Image (cartoon, rainbow, N blue to C red; front, side, top):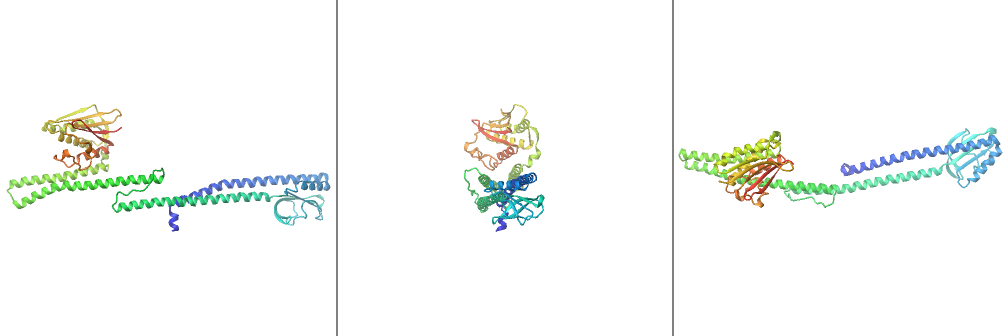
Length: 453
């Protein structure tokens, strides 16, 4: 359990935060501590040396009596403060002046300054002392009580320790809270994933409307699940549509072959049935070819064929190609262009998409109908390729469905096709970063391919 706890990312973040906070706290405290010690030590040594030098000057200039009077006056003036500690003894070690009763045993006979712990009135006291050997065997001790500074240092260290404890405590508590929240969200994700693996694609992650990283993650996950559910539904619908559309030609093919095997007719009828069987097989092959083209376009593999092209020229060539078909149906096919439409794209796919639109328009316009192919540039620089007819049009309720694979509206039930033509047009539009728009022409329908801008 402890190894799992340490491996969890939230705990790692919390421990990193604690470590960095302690480093910052140390970086702040150490220079402050060093500056305090250096400043206090330097100032204390300076005062101690100055006081000692003054007393030595009095001894040299006025003698031991004047020095004794000065020492007694100084210690009497600061008796309540208990800061200055001074002692003057003669060659026999007898006290002559000061507020020490006897010469401390810890002090050596050599002159100089050091820091000592000495007993003052029965209490161990830390002092900075300087002792000087004077002419005539006299010895002078000048000391300063530094315990008050140690108390300040202890308070500083205590505050630093408390701050360190607070940082560590906050880091641990924050890490546990973050870990708890993240683990709860991870459990939600696991439940959603388990439900999806069990086949329930409607399961979603719970989240509120607040703005937070976890809510953003949950909302993104739910959008992903929506897309997955939609894709699964599309695959299911496509599979059903494929099964439905393949069943008819395959059933016809089997019926033809079964009839031939039973009746065994003359060669001429056999050839007619063989041609019909070939037509059925071609229908199946065309369905699979269309699906393969759609799959290739959806994966973006055809982007390798992108070149600079004139979309108006491509549309014009396609219109010319379908002109004989229009004439055979006694249908008018017009091409209108406002000039070249230079863009980057796949000319073959673009031509196939425009061809599918013209083929559909001719199919629904019927004999004596009219189809217009037009290319232009709108006000914001987008390139427009539109195909309009004067046929029955499409109901508003069906306009959002006509680009779904294998979808066939009521108006197309009796016409040839399997419902993949507009799906291929939509795939080509997505590959080129274009959008498809449907609008009524009263009568008829206009399909516009809008590229760019």
